[in-house]
Image (tube, rainbow, N blue to C red; front, top):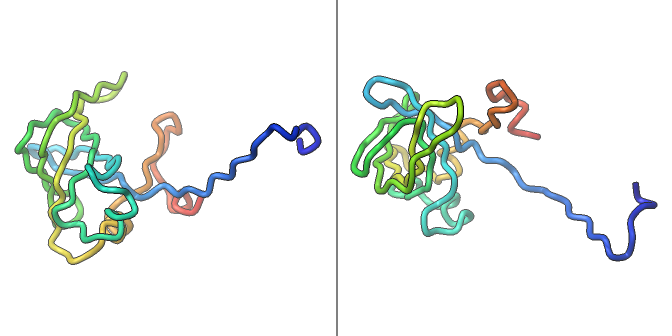
Length: 139
C-alpha cells in the first residue's frame, strides 16, 4: 500500500486509549448501565488526574432519570447524583435511558483515572455482541 501513497496524502496514527468508563448503578432495585462520556466543563486530562469526588460528567444512563435522582454504584462504594437531563437516550432494541450530567461521590481519595481503572470496564460497542474481556484494555 505504500507505493500507492502520494505527496498529498497524510497518514495519521491513532494512539488513543479507551478508558474503563462503563459501570453499573442500581435504580429502584434494578441494575442499569452508566457510560461516562466526558467531563462537564473540564478538560479530560484535568479531570482524569484530579480527585473523583464532586466531578461532573456527561453520561448515558440506561434508565429514565430526573435531575436530583441519586443512584448508587452496584459493585463499589459511591453514587452519582443526576444534575441535569440533556435528552432521552433512545436506541432501537434497547431499554430507554437518559443523556445527562451527573456528579460523582466516592468514599475513597482517588483520582478519576484510578476510579475508572478499578471500578469500570471497557465499553464494548453493541454490534460486537459480547461483554468486555481483559484483553480489551490493552488493544
